[in-house]
Length: 394
Image (cartoon, rainbow, N blue to C red; front, side, top):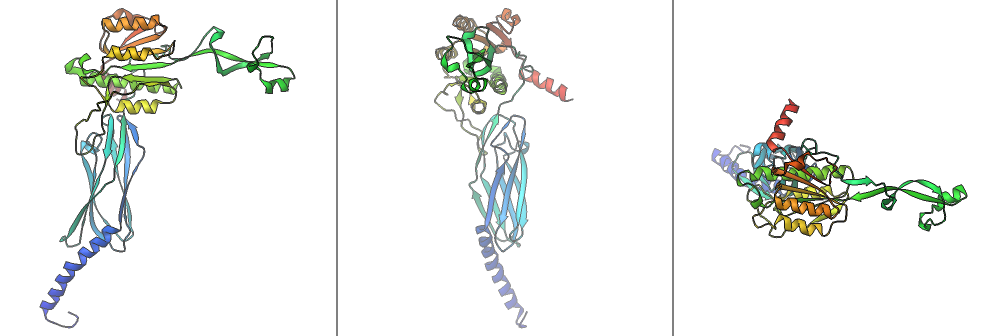
């Protein structure tokens, strides 16, 4: 057209440009394309939402006419229970775009989000390039947390630190005050700083307390549950364990966990199959400030037909607990064997709380005071709790 040549030459050069230039631009743009993912946190609770940001950067000097982005995520936490979320955008040279979507904690567990699939195209739609960005993030959905009142439990069960009337149970970390030195007081009680200030020997007095560790022993042996109700009652048992852990951690108490469940590998967007770990979980000894670790374990455990018998597990745990600890047994039902084992715990100096999630046989223990050495609780079904929630929200 510039040199008034034949029209056929114009068409020839135009086709050559369409054939050569768009693929070249696509390669240049692809090489300068950057994508990243930003999460609000690496874990959130059941029923909550978490915002995810996808940052797309076109660092080249050429525009990107159209770009399709497909983010893979497990359907258990994906938007509207889908396995992916996608966008189609265009980017100017040096443009940065932020794309957002929400993950929903629809089921406890560990999930792997990613990869990200990209599809680039030219303005004519003749060429496109596909690539997969190996961008992964592991997200944990913690179990549902309920208040102990919602679960029908009571907060007066002796758990954590209790004041004790006998001075032999003094807590050296809690100073009640100062008094004058008396002959026979051990030298380590002397407060030298206060003595210098008062110009006489002063000794510390401590609060009379004793620390009661709380050990949760959770039964997830499939053989111990009713077959038709295992899924719901198992989740209820895990909810109880998680709620107790959160409650005691809030009160800054020492808590541990033992279970005959097994760990499950993280779920991806391409598979719903559960891969069970063949090794049993290690017992978590009671300590303060480890609720996050306990919740992570409870988020990723399942039952097993080849699990260690519950009473055998509880017997091993008993041998390692300090005197005066509180033992919480979360079981399907209160069998005669469990009641006999609980009585042996009481005779050994432990406080015992049995929480049944399917039914109770020894109902006389349901009416006992929460300060008794052995108490029994029957927790409501999960669907009943959900009904109470909906009524409160309405």
